[in-house]
Image (cartoon, rainbow, N blue to C red; front, side, top):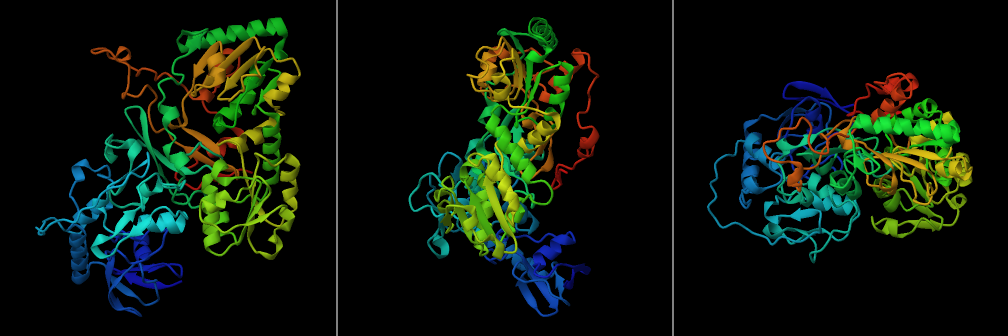
Length: 631
């Protein structure tokens, strides 16, 4: 490992590490725009200048382009290097519109930070500024080309990293333009990352435009709930409204980026019509009255039909805490059925996937990015888990062949990220055995349990795409507790009552069930039909744990307080001069707390912490860590 000295601090780094990254390791931050750890170095912005005093390289050089080598002595404070950085900032600012007061990037803008840090505070240029026309890039990304400093991050990400071909760089010299040949909606399913990767305000999140500054946001580390991959995110909220979602780095999972589905799916959380108050037969009640009413009706149900007539139904949407308490509630209520899944096939396929991934067979997205061969078996990644397709592209860029196996693995998914894939009919046709680190990506939407189980014979790690964010944990718990699917329970003819916790129940299933209670934060069909509705907290309104498709447990933290968003709030709900201890619609509870309250009313013990026993070690899991694999 090379050893070098930076500002009189000795540092040892792995071979291939740039001097810029070596400086970061000892707490020395050098301004840079074009360099990004996921994209590498191009030396385009000329801002990371250092003076190389001794060693194989001498003089002022761009530190992002120079690999660390033995014997190097480097100064970041050298007068000539500091002067160069100031001049670079000054020429970058020549044509900038200086519109920070109205720019959505204000407060999180690297150009602001580096301009101040570089000592450039007096404007000397009095000439005419270069100006550009902006483009319409769709409903999600705002374009303001006049703020561009030509760092090339956007084009490198969009074309090279994400494989998009409808956006890029045009022109030359002072006429360089980043956009499309003709304006229109960006086609890449990862286009939202332009807002994160741009170091200035050229690309900003249009859905949160003019809503808040960076320091106004309520933020916390979270996990995306829109597929089973468990990508790490930073949701940003203000005034009880989820305004936008940003990517959070986790090298083992999503790396630096997230997909547009995870970034722009905020509508359900902010929906005024979502369940926000307990309802009993359509009447608003407080929590005690609603829980007492449900307890009474459970007693009446047991008298009429016996204790085994009740089904406690959860879903793979539930947090791990909710899934754990589902079985305890079923025992307290003497229910006949514990259902972590609604459909029998979904349960069987998830069980097969969980069994397959036991031991060391599970592949993370990082494994996919590093694979030397990838086989995609009967799944459309852009539909089931878009970020997995982005991981496949990184493997392909490094030379890994990509095989699309089966009729449900369409070629369009590869073309969307500019991958040249080979189509096969059967997995046996893929020459996995000749590669050192092959990965099979298997969908559970079309593959039957038997086909999933047979992958245990393959000489490759496997990544299974599961139907919902916490399906892995639901599969584990269902197997441990002897659970069944709701469809199978109803087919016995014994189910006369259902309590559904964040379960998406098809309308036809409980058609003739006398008692239906639903606890959810979505306005589902079950909520619309239920006699008793108990509003639960969305994932951004609570702390919890999620287990992704590879069995990696990750903690997420509460981002915002629940309640109706102030924007669009009905004045009747918020009259003047009325002071409330709780905002309108803010009296919702995490699903596991609703279960805990029911367990206590049914004669069980008080539950303040659901993560006990084998799960206790997850209590102190750092939400900023890479997570912990389940046994």
